[in-house]
Image 1 (spheres, rainbow, N blue to C red):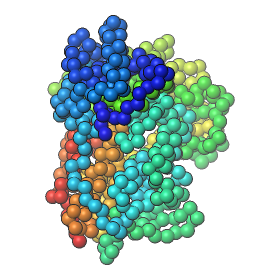
Image 2 (cartoon, helix red, strand yellow):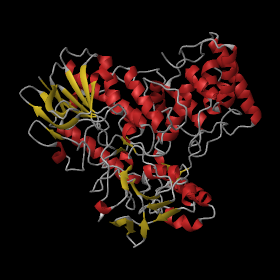
Image 3 (cartoon, one colour):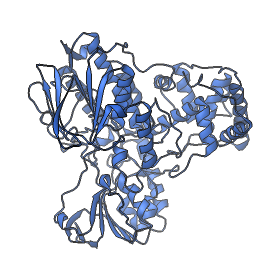
Image 4 (tube, rainbow, N blue to C red):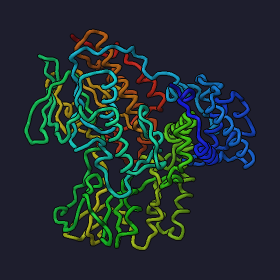
Length: 640
């Protein structure tokens, strides 16, 4: 069922009033695409209805159009939607790829590549992502999934759909992964919720950017809705996995919730442990002497109340920028140790709830819901991709990469100055000396305003030493604290390091990956490790922004296409060819070499100790979409 032909329900008088109010508050650029499809009238994609380009990450709800034009659009949308509710068919239910790209281009007021329409069509349910033929899975095939976070849930949904015998092992006590573990004040998503959602489980979000509690409820709810709980064992620690060549199976060593060790066997092993699950805590002299409460953001103790306390925060990355504004008003003092600087973009939707009439519109008019999502996909995913490429002729390569990147730098600089207001003395302490997007761009949820507070002190130094309750910075600054919070991120480059993995020749994956130099084909598979797949593995994350869930769904679909090709070939095992693996990673490195993340003046968690980018993808989302549509049997070795 596509968005255009989705279920419709005649509204009651109250519902009709709610719908009209939703349309009055709706996003004009999205309504224009709905109008074009519902009426078939091309005038809605022409002047005077064409929106002006929005600013930054703003939804551009009014499209920059005069009020009389907005009123005309909303009135026509109300008429068209009510007529559709009463049974009138959509005039253009399935626009082709070129039409879809043009519609998005008009909606965004900027060029969109014509072939981008292909991924729009799939997202709207007009085409299928998978090209691989559906192959019945053989009876007795056993699959083991390690991890019950977002990736594990996605894997479970696919396995349920295919009717495969599977189990999920999870170290925590419930589903949710990242959103189960990260419960620090202010924890939330930095991607709009309407695209941070499984394609198979849409949700009625209360906020445009949800906080941890709502996110956890969503993922737990999805897992229960699709029936994963009977397949999942919680409180289980996986310690090792080794390939048994005699049985062509993986033997997995686990410690159960009862503390007893045992072994599990599986024909296929899916590792869904993610890349942001091993906290990075810096080595600081005297850390063990701290007399207060010390915690990493990912292990925030239940019941920790910082009200009236002297709090020290180490780090100013994504979690640090969320924690500080959330606690600054209640603590006695907040000292932030920030040895590096970050770019942060204006965040107009921060904290905003989705009005009930808009929620109703999103829930009852699938076509509006899809066009609202599609605009967000472009805004937060691929809009800036071109600006991340290095221009070899650019005269100021230390501060920016190209003309567009330089304009972004100036825009962000002006924003920071405005937010600091009368505290311009802080400007040199917070303004980065590297190009925008050199690190994952952060969203400002009040960070700069927090720095202006009288009880907040920014120390632009590393925390060098701890003596009891006294913290000593690299420049000798001394601060007393009751609570010490490490907002220092994760060991993102040390993927799959939470348990040992032994391949068919007795080789350890951590040795093959040289500790922090992980490589995989399509982020999924490594030579010498048959029937082993990593979800959200090397070079799958999105450095240029966007929904990790989309990337996870695409990659998981690809993994199951590999399994389908194995079954189709009548084989028991599959592994990627060495030359395929090497060529793919060569292309990954070459692409990253042309992008901002390898800029000489930048350090980021995407790179390993050698400076190689290992955590994120250089590809545009529609490019990755094409790569993952089908597994080419020529890339693999199949064995019986």
